[in-house]
Amino acid sequence: MHPIGLYIHVPFCERKCPYCNFYSTTKITDEIVDRYTNIACNTLIKYKEKMELSFDTVYFGGGTPSLLGNKNLIKIVKTIKDNFDLFESEVTLEINPTTLPIVNLKQLREEGFNRLSIGVQSAIDRELKILGRQYSKKDIENTIKLAKTAGFKNISLDLMLAIPEQSIESLKESINFFISQDIQHISAYLLKLEKGTPFYKNKSKLKLKNEDEEAEMYLFLVSELANNGVKQYEISNFALNGYESRHNLKYWKCGDYLGIGPSAHSFIDGKRFYYQRSLQKFLSGELHFIYDGNGGTIEEYIMLRLRLSEGINNKLFKQRFGINIPQIYFEKAKKFQKYGLTIVNESSIKLTTKGFLVSNELISRILL
Ligand code: SF4
Image (cartoon, rainbow, N blue to C red; front, side, top):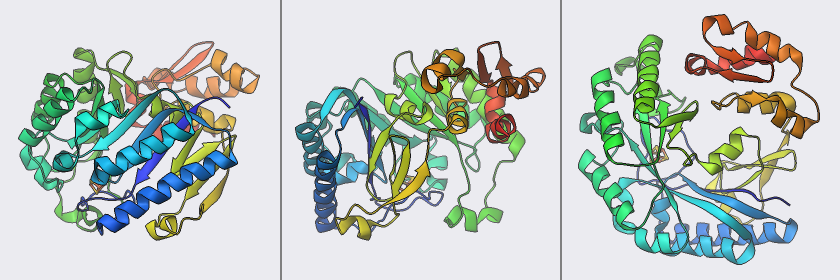
């Protein structure tokens, strides 16, 4: 089987950020962390016995994977290396500046981690405070410095847009800081109010941005990054040439991936399945995944690929489905061209940056 992606969901956080609804728990003990690690390793071995798998990307996400500490992270990576072929893999670790004291980045680099994704969000201390983040701009600088000293040459930073009290000026300051750090990749997300989070409950008290302000920030970000040679390759992702996230590209290109850990999703051989959002069930050691139907349909492929700046094109579509992109999609996408939302020619369809701003609505109108 061709190499696929491997995602490890690490469901631990030091404390819950008030806007976040990713699956994670703050009830952590050494025993739970060790048990999680053992189950993750055993689960990988069970997959090896069930399927012929090899990986060319590995992504430790969360949660806060760096909370596992070196011992456990290395144990999982060794299990992967001992049991599967890793084809010049991109191996990413999400880290949080506050967890620096518990990880030795140099050792992780030596053991095979070669990409870091640092959950920064903003370079403005006041905005970090609003987001409930427990570090400062100085800590971020220190984390990046240590990462580079440890030998990481592929570093991604997360940036958040539409933070309460954020302005175009403060966003510019964060962007300038990111650029000055000489890193390779930026993921930028608009703050979303997720049901059940403290931000959602207190939304009337937060000075939230309206849609026009969000759009202004997004368009400003795209243009500032482009001016600095950091190219947009997906709605929320920007990179120097050659540093696009190989792992995340698998999701948008409808490639196969295996997800391990509570709430992790998988897509293998046209089938989607996922683990429940339950650490307890995961720790029971059974493969408690839930079948989520067939995936990789034409509609799904178009929906995911239109998130990419390169959009969809006939050549790749034909390679995958054996037919050209149905004309109906060209006709529908063309209707939005005059509004500057799509770019359509005889063999490809792309969304513009303005189109990305309304991508959900736009893609569903093209597909309906
Ligand atoms: S944003 Fe990150 S660190 Fe904060 S609670 Fe969510 S997963 Fe944990």
